[in-house]
Each structure stands twice: as C-alpha cells, then as structure tokens.
Length: 276
Image (cartoon, rainbow, N blue to C red; front, top):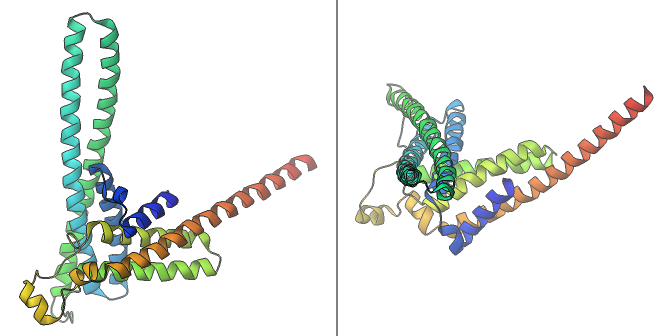
C-alpha cells in the first residue's frame, strides 16, 4: 500500500498522463483518505491552541468528504442501474430456457449485486463521516467566534493543508532518524496523502477563505492557496517527490526489519521447543 501511494504521488507530481486518469471510485478514495488525515491534523492544531488553523483544516476535510460522498452516491446509483439491467436480462433468458446463458447471467448478477452492496456500504460510511465532520466544524466555529477567543483571520485551506504536510514530513524524518520505523512510516504516509490531495485536487476543495476577485488578488499581492497551487506548484511537487521517496524507502526498511524480527522470533521458538 505504501509503495502504491508513493508511486501515485510521484506520478502526479511529475504530471504523468496516467496519473491524471482516475476513476470515480479512486478519486473518492483519495478524498476520503485526505479528509481523515485533515481531521486528525485539525485535532492536533486545536489541542495546541491554533484554533483558526484547526477550523481551516476542518473545513477542507468537510469539503473533501462532501465531494467524496457525492462521487460515491453517483457510483452507487450507476451500480444499482447495472444490477437492475442484468437482473432483467437474466430473467428474460431464464424464461426462454437458455440454460447456458442463464447460468452466466446469474453469475454476473451476483457479481453486480456484491459490487452494489459494497458501494452502498461506502456511501453509508461517508454519510456518517460527513455528519460527524459537520458537527465538529460547527462546534469549532462557535468556539472561534466566541467573545475573548482572540480570533483573527482564518488561514487559507490550501496553505493550512500544505503546512500540515510539512509538519508531518518533519515528524516522520525525526522518527526515521531515531529508528522508529513504524511511526515514521505512518507520518510519511499521512504527509504523502495530503500532498497527493493538494496536487490532484488543486484548490477546488482546499480554499476556505473568501473567494477574492482577480483584481483584489492582484492588489493584495496573492491569492493564498491559489498562488501556492499554481505559481508554487513546482515547489509542492518537489516536496511531494522527496516525501514519497522517503515513504517508499521507509516501507522497504520496515519490511526488512519485520522479516528479521520474525526470523529471530522463529529461531527463539525453535530453541524453546528443542529445549523441552
């Protein structure tokens, strides 16, 4: 899984044609994974008293979940239509006593039914996640707007997301240097998920501030996340390749360490059995 994620992130950063061709299901999965990492990042910022950062990240997570839910509902509707059509054809062939084709159709209907059930489960999971995200964002918004909260302007969502990926990358590097490969692998993975989200989705779901006009953006000297994603995309892409590369290397090192540990444990068990 880590190797596949790293490869996808590097391909997206380099602008490979295959990376830009995604299915509805894979895009929804990317959005859902990013939303989960953003949720956790928001919680960490809230606990460290960076409440506006936390609210910004929560809103990005909410936007990502909303789009993932929409895509998943579309996929579920399409799966249901395919299942109904296949069931109708199978019933027709059964009435015509075409045994060979009927058996094949029954298998196909069962396959489509299983696919439909899986998509319905995904929709239900995303609906629950979205409802929880709405509740968290509302509570955070009320707290930030409360008298004496010391609130200023909320950071742009794309910038907050990028900064979250930087923090995760730094934490992963520290864990890797101290030999905590499992923690390093987890942090590298989460950082890569956010970077892939930024590169593949752009600012479409990561803008949480006001949508300034082009004239206002030029007058103020920038458009927050928009500037990050377009003029600064090369910088984000370079960081993505670096983090994804470390993710892949860390995954390889963890696999070697786990294999070595299993070998040592197996030898110890053999010796214990022999001793008895």
